[in-house]
Image 1 (cartoon, one colour):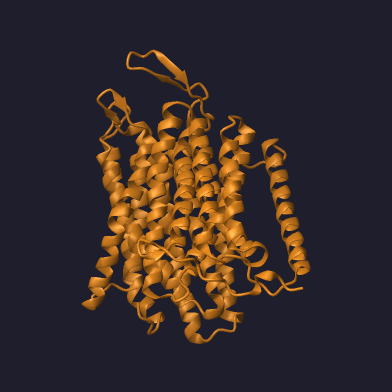
Image 2 (cartoon, helix red, strand yellow):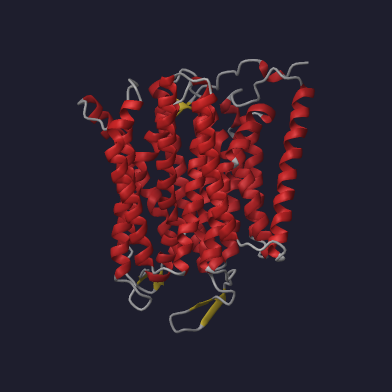
Length: 514
């Protein structure tokens, strides 16, 4: 018998949310709480891993108020763990999307993924080394299920497409950044000020709140997001057994490898593992595009556009390798070399992780209006030029911070204004390259390759996150001023190269309206 999900989805019930389908409010708050939990935990991650196992919180008179021990890892190891974690979150979005499309439907994938995330945060709150790493693994799996599929359900709210759909995603994007703004404030207050594990637990509470309202608001989604397939229940069950059998087989192999590394049977470390993984992913993506260009059966015009997608993949990976140091090297700079004293109160370093989301909320509508205004005057920069501008904005932020770091020391920390200006420039770069690049990928991809190219975009983000961790690990041997200056020069040089190459890249794009 065919699956019951073959019937077309019923339209969502009436009612509006800021002029949009009422179901958008359900997804808005689900994603808000998920990002609250993700960015809240991320803000604590590198600080907890590098905090001394004998870490104590003292009062103004030097008296011990409470102990708050961390893991005591060196910066290189902690940064490698951070890079592996944040990259795997994006990589697992690929199988997470497959599970939704073929086994569960997006609605179920979001719900199950959310609970796995919450359990992961609560597991991290237990306070042991094994529970810390198990919690990270669960969050990776849960986010891989939730993150790509909640966005898919948003798109299904607007079967007519068009500008109203774009506007709906803009509202949804505000939910992402509202969660990203609030998360570090709550978890930082609890985690840095009282106990790291309270902060991790608070992230889990946030995810549970998101799941409660997701279930309560499910009626406003109608039938959208359920599994749509012609496969019988037996075929779906067979696919499920194969997928999860393979998945847990891979997990078991990774666990065995980790055990052999930890016991010294295999002589390597996490930094080397992350490095090999990064180069392997880059080679696999390059090989995939070579296959598409030679054996993919595409026309010369399509191959040119695929070349542009590959170019954008390289640029976005490089961009995230700098931008995502917000959670590592910039977070450590905030902790160690930034004056956070306000009267008798010391602001938690993780509070500064909310700055980027605050600027996104403020600037995203302005940038959207700016592109429309320039388009009306036929002065809108092309996608390749905007991508170059994004890299240059990121480089400018690192140049500013390297200037601040040159005057910073533990005895003479600098004002948080250096980080605020840096995050402002990074946000400007993000708004210039990320959303417009994503839009370009969907338009440039051959019709039968759109899903695959979206997967490549996710892999670009994963690769950037991985290298961000590896670069931040250089703080073990490099002074912050040297690290930030080097990153600024590399990314700035790439931005100039991208700007020079932009006319040629634009020609490869053909006559698409960019």
